[in-house]
Length: 409
Image (cartoon, rainbow, N blue to C red; front, side, top):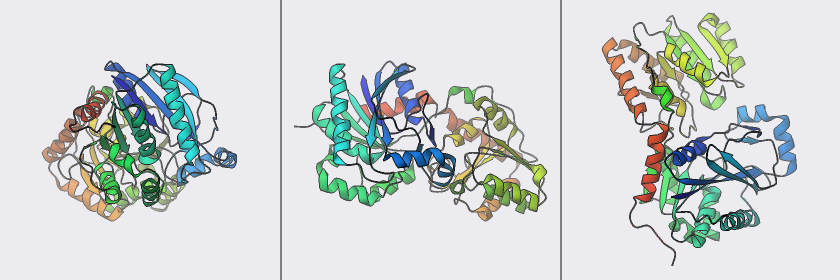
């Protein structure tokens, strides 16, 4: 099949984008391995020049404080790349500033350039899938007019733009386009609830989860969970991820422990200050950013992985920790809702609630060694079903096997 994937997020060499993610790249590369022809339209966001200058000067501060990507370079030309068999076409998509709506001329430019380039290359997509509902509901919906036999999909992520504002805009400018989308993907259960409260229930939908490399499942370590004393946090040390709450909850238990932090951010100093104040600095290790291979080694040494963040679209690191037989504690009503079942293959806590986290840790301590082992084993089994290949194949099946696909007349 020929697959056209539209996304404002894609990791390419030479770009400087903080908080970037390669979730779409992972899907695309797996589809190529499955024998499909994949073209990615990388909708590179550009703004008024002043915002790029500010982003370049204060990139880390902005990335640490706000949710979303920070684009420093202002690329204004169309470029083509080949990324492990995936054809990537970077087309700039302009709006005045982040969180603003795109002007009509920017949307039309994007659509016209996609059609022009596809025509030049005789690329007629069988599937058109767009990540992030805005602006891709409009772009994918209008591309359907040209590629009438294609199946269309929109995958919903959290976005730093007012959902009611975009709904009002789409209802006014192109109300019929919402109904032209064949299949809807949601990055998590809470995201589906968040989206459907405004846009209504969608009949054909699936959960678009990310996967892990099979290397995370290889050579699993034999772990013992008595005594329970080795904990790890992997993620940006920023406020919305509540890294300090993890340390507070452990300190409250008055136990011997080690807590490793992998990541950087503006909460690092607060963690250091709190550890010093409570005289537990020797129990805390701040590793900063480290290589992925080293992360596996540290996960193997840890017994419990904790991150109780908010606005977590998915959280691949939880699955990676589960693959290394860690007992995982994630946030309730966030990205792991529906994957982690409380008390079965992990635990769920209210985001940022260090007191509830202490209660959960106390409960885990009260479990027998066999019960702790069972939860870790269940976590590993969950991770086994979420490899890159499995989730990429499931993504396509959910689009191609749906009934009652709508065609333009």
